[in-house]
Length: 127
Length: 111
Figure 1 (cartoon, chains in turn orange, red):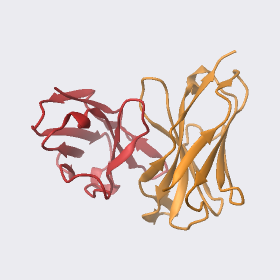
Figure 2: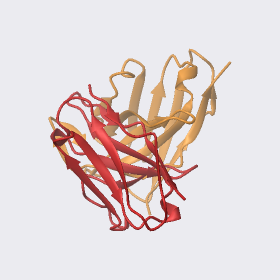
Figure 3: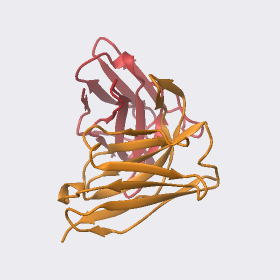
Figure 4: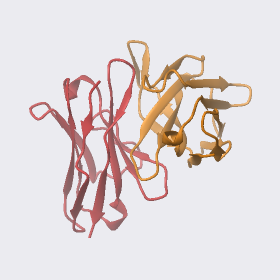
């Protein structure tokens, strides 16, 4: 059974960089049939896609966050990571990592639903 | 970019049928597939519909999805409602510039 687990600090100071890692177990992050993503949810609000990465290292970011986001993959550790710089209180959210089923490419962009999600980790931005 | 608009909340009785709408603000609803996610309180989302009307294995056939080009909207229909269906439901699609777009979510109450 595939499992994803987010890890990282639960409290980050304003203007600093939020860093999270998602460890994948029960399956390989290098499979060409899937891609991997980060989604966040502010308390009491809806879902926001942050970005996705393919095992090859190709990345796809939400344009509204692109200038602050870096997603990377470490196939040797079966992990992928999120860095979000210059955080503010508006970045306080539950952050989820998830696996995307690669159904097709649309203009070189991976498309498909997220079928496995981590439990989520709350990151609070506060001094 | 476009927005996906969902009703804030819907409610229905056990055993009945409920439909949740998801209206695309610009561009054709048929131009990109729509997914639906269920999120129970305190849990991560799970997929109940992908590619407009496909059910993942394990999702009961009480869940169905459709799109309507005339209203430029997608719909999630849940028949034979059970108390366990009480959750938030999010629609999701894509735009041409890479972005995943989520609807604002609909709280389903089964009472």
